Amino acid sequence: MVRDQFRWSAIGFSRRLLGQRIARTEWEALSAWRGLVHQAYQGQPLQPNICSDLWYQNRFQNPSARKAFFTPNRREREASSHHYGHDIQLKRYAGIPLVGAPIPMLLEHGLKVSESARFETPKAWAHRGYLCMGPLRARWLREQHQVPARAIGPWIQFAQPLLNSEQLESQRQLWGKTLLVVLAHSWDQVERSMDQQACIDAVKTLAEEHSYQQVVWLRHWKDPELLPLPKHWISACNGHRANPWFLDALRTLLELCDGVTSNAFGTHLGYAVALNKQLHWIDVAAEQNLSSLSSDKAAEEDAEWRERQSLTAALKETLSKPLSLKKRSLQTLFEPYWGLSLKPTPADIKSLLN
Image (cartoon, rainbow, N blue to C red; front, side):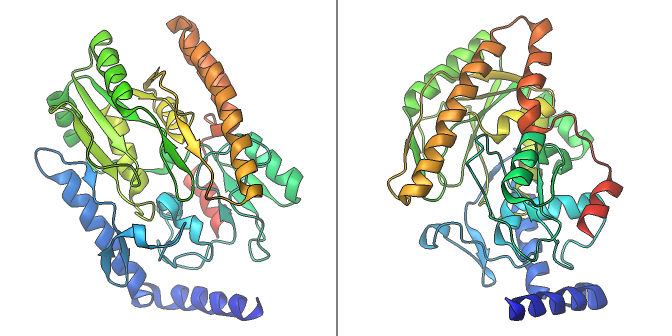
């Protein structure tokens, strides 16, 4: 522990002193990922299907051969702070170096809706505790661990579209009214499955009923690549979890779409509401297999799943309300988990990270 503390103190000092002349591998990794994302979004027609490989040892590699939760990045002390580019989003927003001194806190990289669920346990070096999205999660962390925890709102608000305003408008004109599909997905040792054809049929019906002219089917990097989608639908992927521009890609798709539909109570729903997108629900149940987890972890994930199902019932009821009541009801339902009303300034975030 002392050796690790000394090592990261030295890393932080050298990065402050020497700037981009140090940590070349991390800067090169950012450039490699940026090139991959640029290639997907700057061509015509738009091809938002980012490769699911990950950058490791100076080349892109298949992530399936790696252990669960593997990440090669070393920008931060806690590997999970790199998931989906959360560290990059915050540092860019705050105007501080993307590769610099390690952040003295843990970044919760998603949504947990049950009190017993967890991402990372407290670390001695993380003396400033946690940053998470919603105030309920922050309260649970403070009560359970007696450490600082700060809610900062939905991560998507710190992301930036990969297209400029003129490109976004041009692409909206090209696609027309667009529906983004984000289904329940597997992650590491949790396998989720559903009737994919039933989902496709449900989306077809939904698109017809609401006059959507285009459908973007966003798959997780662990999902099957080949699905029997209609030829004119667009298949998209934001790349591996280690992609530091993952949230930028997601923000771009959300900016291009008018509505979002799902069969999972997940992070993407709050992001859609934060960006004022119309929500729809696909009534096709997903099943999850927890057999690869330890008994304790399986019990934790089962409790989380059951709580999400309860929230799904509340969401479906909310979506059935008249339009005049729906927006306020969604804000009320989502606020504890996403902190939709929280709008920290760059100066706020900088003070937390430094």
